[in-house]
Length: 119
Length: 103
Image (cartoon, rainbow over all chains, first blue to last red; front, side, top):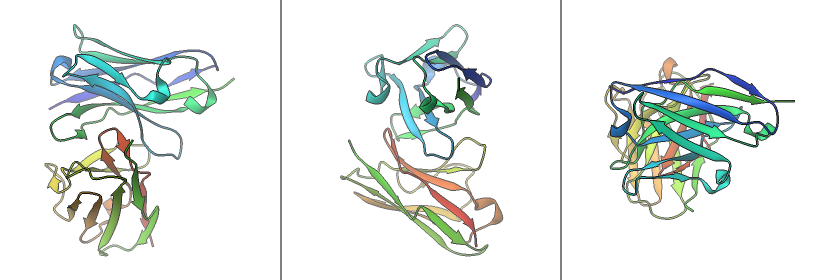
């Protein structure tokens, strides 16, 4: 059974960067296609990007292209999502979740990491 | 890009009610639709995948149906634990959510 533990809450100033981690246990990271989804306060779920095993590449939502970088450390089974040039609209809970390419679902989800962008 | 539209946005219901939430896709997505439940302060939880397949451990009062562009999530008899927000999802796109609240 996959378990995901994310890093703790962050407070950042506008223009800064944030790096959120997602530690996998129960499976190895190479067995999963890890993706990231965020949720602004009181809002819905927004996909940011994730790993495409067919290409071996990471795909990003157009909205975040150039500002987001998703990486993986397979030696520690930890996935990372780094978002740069932060603005107040980036204040959100960021979730990691493996994506099943066969049946089209995200499961399970990490507990979420609140990133607050404030001057 | 495919758009997913849920209705209603908010639904008021009582314990024991039969509840139906609709999700419409802007173009045919076959049966590639999943449903999630999210409670305040918690991560989403997968309920149904491939439109009608119940995730292991999910109570049988939850069911999904539909194909093509129109899908429904039904809770046959609403329980106190079911008051939450529900999202549909197709590939990278989520519906805007339906909040089920106590009437």
